[in-house]
Amino acid sequence: MKHLVFCLLFSAFLISHVVAEEVSLQGNQMQGGLIFGMTEPGNRVELNGQVLPVSANGHFLIGFGRNAKKEATLKITGLDGRVNTRILRVAPRTYKTQRINGLPSRKVIPKPKDVVRIRADNSDIARVRALDTRQAYFSSGFIWPVTGPVSGVFGSQRILNGKPKNPHNGTDIAALEGTIIKAPADGVVELVHENMFYTGNTLMLDHGFGLTSVYAHMSALLVNEGDLVKQGTPIGKVGKTGRVTGAHLHWGVTLNHTHLDPALIAGDMN
Ligand SMILES: [Zn+2]
Image (spheres, rainbow, N blue to C red):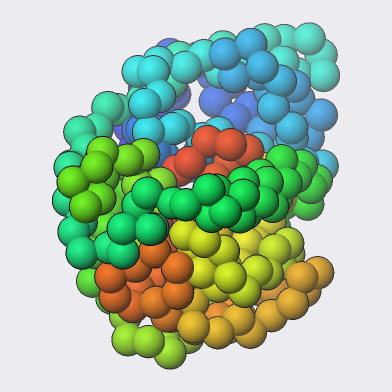
């Protein structure tokens, strides 16, 4: 699918323009998708009028959120002032409704003292998502951190113990407790927390340029804040800490504050 999107885009572009080499886009042009862009170093890149950070090698990222509009305007301005504008079409998706029952009621309707804890957890997470590290760690590409049945998909509307909640902002992978979780891409460990209210043992990686990932409900944490990890490095073990009904990994990927679909980024599970 990834490849298909890429090829369609390019063939259409090559027919109408001769300056296609000024930008290449790989990834999923759909809601929840992440695009790995590449342009000539020094070019200025804007998406819908907003300037995007570009690495010294010309890498940049575009993320389409759960409810992204069906079109986005990409504008590349070269060092010579030449402007190349194109419309990116973003495929819409439909999202499931997932009902989960049997959660402890306190994890669905928190007590006032839990709310204090939840706010502190959220501010730790927000700090990492606000990072704008200018190192393109993400250029390693992405693999699945754990393989197993996907028990929760990105974007689904959640009804927990009968109460409508926020959409699910990651991918859940069911696996035996203790299964090793690998770093899906290069990055820096930016947060290690042993007891978040919802996510239990929680870890976050910074992949650079505003792209971060989160790993929740783990039974063990195997790295420390500040560690530089390579794709495949063991970072933790699958568990059932926090708000869960069974052992699984909740994996989330976020570009700045836009949640993306990790399953699209990792591609087919082998
Ligand atoms: Zn989840």
